[in-house]
Image 1 (tube, rainbow, N blue to C red):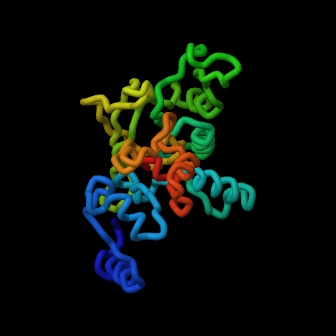
Image 2: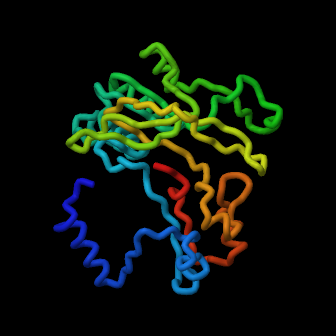
Length: 265
């Protein structure tokens, strides 16, 4: 977004085209008959499925969780943060997307940096206080817990920072390309025709959350239910795509499905 399109981007595109790369745009693979998966398999030796990020992902201040945590730990061990080679959350409005262990570490580290506020967004619904009927012993109890990062946030800011059933639509930046907020929407989970839980956006629930620093700590839920996957019956009953079964069923040992195709970030 911030790179010169003619002198830099187009020059690089031209170089790749001279190397033999053929760029095809405005195509819906699997829906457009001319670009069916069968045809692509016949004409190519390998197929890679890769997704695009949420709009605004390139903004300054949007980082992956491990980028933030690794740099912090290395700088701390190397110089007690004196070298400045880490992403500082000091005085910033921090939003952590993802409610797992890594997200908790991002919350705790941001508090230790003296962030001005912390918000934790979770796509899933709030877990029950006790085991649900479908989660009996000896399965791992999927129940509500308060992790150390959330406890520290509540102690400092007076409330649990986590918001459940929230989906990020786009990151918003200022005129300098620095993130200043997120546009989000609330979702509702319900069972589909197969009896599996899927989420739907709640109409009219859009809102803007201010942020100077956004940390991406999401897990993998599987790709969206798109035609290219449904048509070739490579969707499983749990998370969208069963990678090993897909390879076994199709024989596409040369095909790769990028992990981050399952994310919207």
